Length: 390
Image (cartoon, rainbow, N blue to C red; front, side):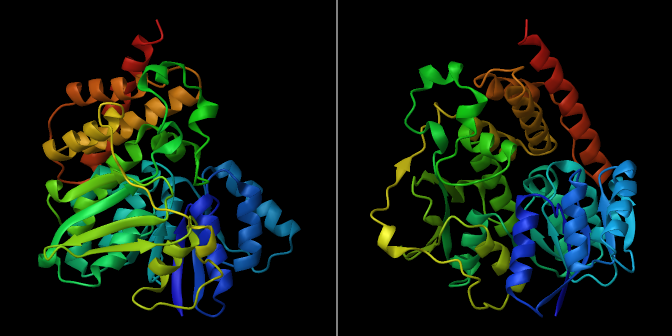
């Protein structure tokens, strides 16, 4: 039985992870969970899965959680914690084998890093971990000799394909992108895009930020950075192609010309189960591709001028230092401003570009350096957002 902890248990990935646990009785023990502000759902998860530690975003939330669990007659009560310290306790519980890191934003980064330093296997669904601090996190995992298993469907697909050959035999990684809701919209109309339009993803049901990142293709930029750290390839070995059906999740091209692709439905339970059960493959949890509905597989080149966020991500990766961290922070602030009506859709890449231009060049030595760079990038981003309001 694998003993797991979850950062972000009430989010989309966290909920689906617990669905996977339910579908495989006797395979997992949920030792600890960290939720955000959804205390009601955290209480329901606690009553069902009986973790030993539960952490929520605020101390007021922890008080509410205690009251809800008492009302549900949960006995004995788990240890109830809050804020960043609570997340770290969840991530580093001594009895945990594998951490699923699915908290949104950099809030889960220090806890995830500490878990890796302590020798936990990492099932990674939080893009910020490798975008902001890939070098530090992967160095810690290598030192501990522990696996980093990607939950993100594209990287999970590549991980599966790479099992067919040696790393020295790899020529190229090919990340597929749906193209988002604006694949066919002319760039001239982007200035009038509304949050409602950006959140109408054609294939996936995701959180608000990642859905907006899919509309700008910044999510693919983040995935390029992640792929570099996860698989140890050079930047020029990572290609992005548009595949509107999202049936092929990604591909690996080998030096002999062979291309392996991983296909599956647009259901995150499949990569979650793979990451949690690796190196085994267990019977399906009911997720299956409907071959009868599969009519065609289309591919298109990415129009980089139309979607400048992908270019900005590659530039940040190639320049290195604090710039990938700044890229993530600037994107998060810009997307939030767009969703709140404080910034236009075309303002998102403009703010990010200015943040990258203004960001000091530093090399990270510790997680404190990462968090300081994140803070500075957010400050600059807010300045740039304010300029565009006038």
